[in-house]
Image (cartoon, rainbow, N blue to C red):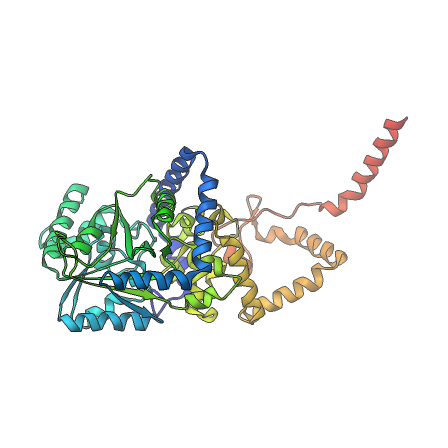
Length: 481
């Protein structure tokens, strides 16, 4: 799930913090999405009741996942579809490769799918000589830029119009104006040709309806409909937990998803298909494959501490309120899934704290993410649990262990605590500028490189408390007289 084999967390953070445009664009986009969510949920007046309903539905599905998976598989196959169970990302990629080999197709048009990002499908297909075209405009932009998504909902939020025009010009073969109508027209012309040419399409799946075998896609561009109706063959990728029992529960989840993701009452295109094409249907694929990915979701299901993370509906609301994400953007995380939910699920999907142990520290633990989550995942609590497990399993650095060992030894004693505070208040002037602590030795320097700290009060409270206590007693005595 890494964005780069050469990812270095400190280098990535430094790069993000020095990129003024990235930080401005990220804050602007997340502000818009966050404010849209707040306005549209306030309109309902009973948002907490909707959140409670969403939590119950997702809990019910997760707790009965084996039943609903079997029901979904049975109905998909009854309808004439083909179901493939992929235990690992490698399995999912191999299944997809076999479908392409069977038909000999050399062009595929894709609708937005985080699962295909999770399994890194595009590079493998391209190595097989297949032209892969992302049809979601933002995904198309970052595909040309050879970059991963920076946000789960608005993946190209870090690009401006001039940068996009520069990316499009080599394909267009001539200079392009950077105004929105010109860029949109160019993208539409490219997409229409590909939609009409391809014989195979790949889509994601927001929710699969177990009792009918229906898959649901939520988009704002309509590209999902083109990819799922025009080609002869369709492949749908889904995580095994993305199921609802029936259309009754689906209506609740769609209301939660649209409002939480983009501040809309309903996305512009909510597409429900029950492929493959039947006699009398005017469109739809003749052959349909549903690939259901596990990728350690079974292990998460069996983990009581983290099972609630499977409730996630990938709305991105937690991204838009996270103070860390809003400062550094998605690429700094180094993982496909960034933001608070990425912090939680990436180490679980990869089962690897050594590689992903930096993620649980990309959080201030302010709990804004948990408050924003439409299905009430206690994200900040789960992040703390990750940190706890890392300590127990010995994944913390030797320096950190020593620091906290000495911290616990000296600061647990009131006398030594007061001594350290007094010492700090006397010599902190060496680190101060304009009344704030602006520099410090490592690891304090990691903080002061971008922020300042308030100084230790002088005199310290413990020194003035005896006199305050004496004054209080004297004042009480005077009141009695």
